Length: 252
Image (tube, rainbow, N blue to C red; front, side, top):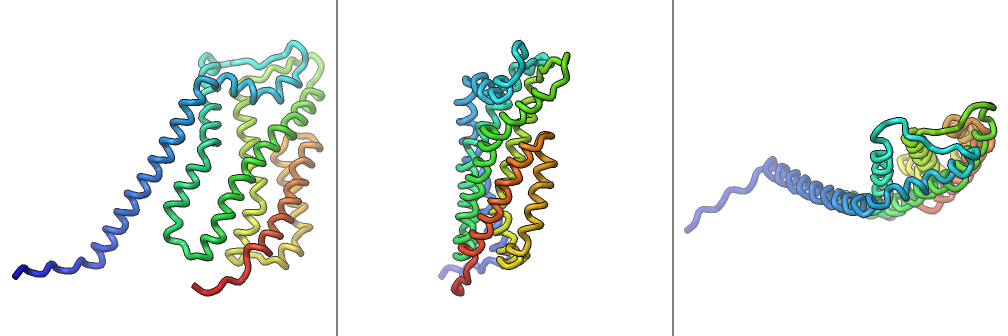
């Protein structure tokens, strides 16, 4: 008669569970990295074309005879590759977020999944919308203004690396600012605010939107208004989302 194996201790069970979670996390991260690298490799041959498209809002509004310049030896090669990486990350983000969701979702309750899924999708779409708004609406207006206020006798020739850094910063800033509805819903979900407080706080939200817009946008009134007004509208969208998503849920 064989001897009965001893039951595993609670510490062994915890350690085994932690190890399995780490293995799964590594697998998810590797999949996300592989997708990112594949997209990056596909974009490298067209990196210069991508940069030309990114530079259009500025190039089309520069004075006749002006052009972008490269002040560093390697920047004509490195800067388009840097842009290709950003675009690859931009394209791969749905897969990266899916891998993150697949890792954390098994540990969530049903009502948490019900709230997290639309927030995750909305945050991604709103970030994309913010970047598109910056590229198609704000940057052309800002560069037109900056060209108009350039002092006489000053040649407007922007370095390609500095231009990329500026545009990426604008994309990131506008993408984050467009996350207002998601931030409002999260604050309401954790009990910081409720629908009544959000309605009463409209005035503060409007002032805050204009303050943030004044800090982020180039120094012209039009750009500030073009960011502040969408943020105010997105605040209202967040209020509607709070009413729709944060309903009393049945107990698990």
